[in-house]
Amino acid sequence: MGTIVLYGGTFNPIHKGHVNAVKAVAKELSPDRVIIMPAKIPPHKAVVDLASEKDRVEMCRLAFLGIQNVEISDYELKRNEKSYSFYTVEHLKEKFPNDKIFFIVGSDMLMTFNKWYRYKEILSMSSIVCVSREENDFNELEAKANGLREFGEIIVLKTKPFKISSTQIRDMIKNNKDTSCYIDEIVVKYIKEKNIY
Image 1 (spheres, rainbow, N blue to C red):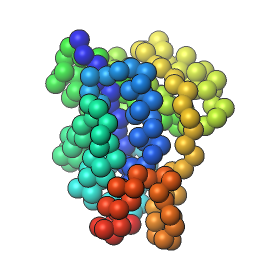
Image 2 (cartoon, rainbow, N blue to C red):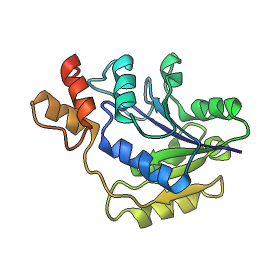
Image 3 (tube, one colour):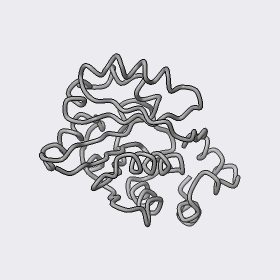
Image 4 (cartoon, rainbow, N blue to C red):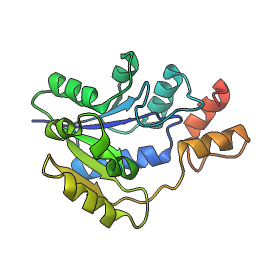
């Protein structure tokens, strides 16, 4: 039996917080493969200034260059509907029936996980790995996880916080501010060359 880590998101743009989350989970779980899954239409939020699908895939590819066992999937981008995680996890379970799936979510996502579409079934097919984004939210996240653990496994990881959002980064790019401390240099170069935001 192998292990798969799934990490989905808008990645608009992908930043070091995303990459650090994957590295922290990979260090903890030593997965056989890590699947990065850019979302087509995220069900949980309205998206402004959304880069093209092609550009978001390429930014993800560049951000994870040289990181072992990472692959970028366009599965959700090919679906002509909202990117509900249930369908993605179900697809991976059908494709890799003998592998264990670990699904990365951020702390904000875990706090609303019980409102997700078919969340109990997601937990029956995969283990949730919550990556903390704040200094002091571990106890709150553990309490939330405890309320959901009757439906499946939830791991809450303590990681170094990364206090920036893709929205803030897009604003910085529009205002010609240096974003290299938040985005990998190779991704910054790509965004500038393509004039994405």
